[in-house]
Image 1 (tube, rainbow over the protein chains, first blue to last red):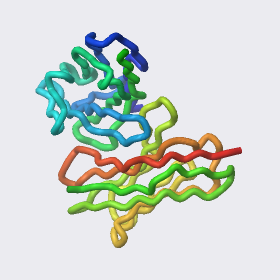
Image 2: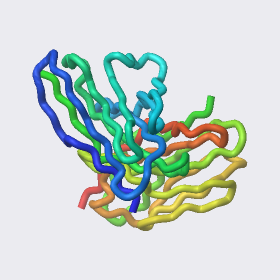
Image 3: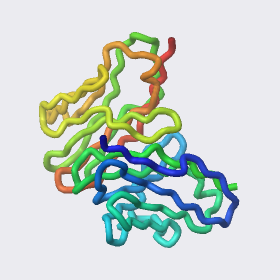
Length: 115
Length: 112
C-alpha cells in the first residue's frame, strides 16, 4: 500500500516552454503533498508544501510564480515549471502523507532536462 | 533549527562486508528518525524508522537504534550485497513539525 505515482519520469524540452509534473497517491488520500528538488549527488531540497484545497506554502528562495503548485484533490498534486530554462534542469520528487502521518511516501521522481 | 549530519561518502565495500553509516542529529524535543534509500534514477524508499529513544528500526537486514544520549541513529548491516548499492539518507521529523530534514546522503557501492 501507500503508493505514490509521479509522471512523467523523464522529460526533455526546449527553453521557454512550461512543463507539468503530476503526483498521484494511488491507494490513499493525500492531505499533504511535498515537492522536492534534488541536484546531482546532493540531498533533497524542499520546495513547497501543499495541502488539498489550499494554496501551497513555498520555502524561502523558491519562486512561486516560477513553480506553480496545484493540489485540487486528495489524490493529485501538480507542479508546473513555467518558462523553463536550463538552470531549472533537475530531479524533482514529490511525496505525500495522509493527515500528517509519517512516513512520507515518495514518488519515483521526474528528471527534467531543459535544452 | 533541527538538523541531521550524515557521514560523507562515497563508501565502497566488498560483498558480505559490514556496513555502518553514521548519522547524528540536533533537535529540540523528541523527533522521529528515518533512513531512506534511493536507487539510481528512482525516488526515495523508506528503509526503517524509529519514533522514540531506544527504539530499533530494522528492515532487509539493516538496523538503526535511536540513541538519545548520543543523539545518533547509525545505520548498520552485517553483510551487504551488490543490490544494496544506493544512496542512503538519514532524516529527522521534528516533534512539532511536519517537514522532514534530510542529511546530505551517503553513496554506497558494493562490489562483487
